[in-house]
Amino acid sequence: MQHLYDIDVRVPMRDGVGLAANVWRPAEGTAPTLLVRLPYSKDSAILGQGALPNVLALLEAGYALVVQDCRGTHRSEGEFVPHMADRHDGEDTVAWITKQPWSDGTVGMYGPSYLGMVQWETAVTGAPGLKAIAPAYTSIDNYEAPWYSPGGALSLSLLTMWNAMMYTADAQRSLAAGEGSVAVDQVQQLGQALLAPEALNDVLPTAEVPVLAAYGKWWDDWMAHPSHDAYWDAMELTPELKNVTAPALNIGGWYDLYIGQTLRTYTTARQKAGTAQAREGQRLIVGPWDHLSASGVYPDRSFGPPADAQMMGLTDLHVKFFDHWLRGDTTALDGVAPVKIFVMGIDQWRDEQAWPLPDTRWTDLHLTSTGHANTADGDGLLTPEAPADTGHETYLYDPRRPVPSAGGASMPVTPGFCGPVDQRTVAAREDVLCFATPVLDEAVEVTGPVSLTLFVSSSAVDTDFTAKLVDVFPDGRAINLCDGILRTRYRGGLATEELMEPGRVYEITVDMTGTSNVFLPGHRIRVDVSSSNFPRYDRNTNTGGVIAHEGEEQMIPAINHIHHGPNHPSRLVLPVIDRKDRS
Image 1 (cartoon, one colour):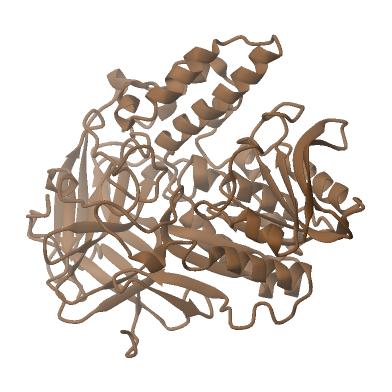
Image 2: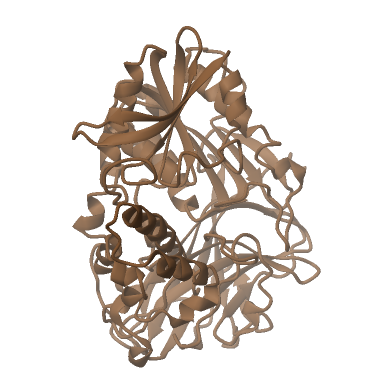
């Protein structure tokens, strides 16, 4: 199909604001249309990197394409405030497309991260022309991902870097309009500085980060609402899934910062979307990818050529998905399973029928030791049997000396900051407890949600507990798989704060999102426990106060204890899959 290309087409919104779009439309006749909305410039390259399908392939498949700057970004009019206008603007844009002479009246949406958020924000309006969406690396609850964590800690490195980037663009727009109040070069310099994680050591109190705090905008609001209160409730889309009529192709990465939300969104939409078609039409794909890379190649662990998103056919899958729902090709998805996951360890793609897997055997591995589980060289053990003896582990969490981030589902800013990273350096610290199984004689597959239940006490009224699932290789490499953090004031829920009584034992659960990995013979399963993961998350000052407004002078060390034994069954809960046909 031949296309005509129009630049900076003005799309009117209901309040008169015009949003700029680039449009690839058929030279003759009509076509189904794919819509991409983004705040990072519609003129940027979107030809098929990472989780994005190849644009040329979509055009060759006979689709029209509209790429639009979100309100208040780049060439679009209005003011940009994250998420505030995206529901109405998405709904209005879909309606505008369906009325164009080159449109056949059907619209699909795709794209990762913020581009995925705006898809769900459009879908919950029930926009009649929207027939399918393909959100990747994204969330329907902006508190739990990306700005905070499911355990209530602030996503510090992501928040500072993303705001510096967005404020720089906003400052440039304001300066061009003669409205600049903050020097653009100041914002740009800060943005560059924050690309180095160690720079965040000096940004205390968090709410007063230079330039970002002065620039204000939504930064002040996000700092003022550390709990999942009414402010965040207004942005959460879960209650509105009942309005969704568009099936979704949900795409995630085991090392993506949104992985927990990607998995929950799929399962929740399967249950609560507004029509049987939308519920049954949900699809899920998860690869060994992070937020910006879908190659599956990392310095400490490579998952092989099949792991690359483009090599495994991600573009072709987009075409099939849209052909089915926009063109009515009932055979387009034949042979495409509802769930497709990359199983690490054996490094293979596998088709499944549901998530979590129906044959999951939930397995407890109990934490035990003789009181010396500090560091990977300690005596911390994971055992299937509950320990008969009572005991506890102790370590000092000093927020002035936090455990450094080493890989994981975080925003990549420097090499080694995200993805699978050897944990040996971090696990050599005295404030990291390590509990491991003996060397495995047989393979153990862990596929599904992972959590850690701990019985804890502390000298502080509030502190954090972190958990990290690790695959220990025969050569000593210790590769992280998934992790989590819980701010203990939120142990009863993210909406309310409840401080601890020093010395009292509490049962808590750390959500570690999920993974799919086969621990091979000769390997060991390990969980690492501590109280910080910095600068991925902000440091708990341990005072019970408003952390974002406290500096180093307010920080106090916490003596933290992990209890285990018959009365305090601290345990790692794993989704074990037993299959004889595993190769």
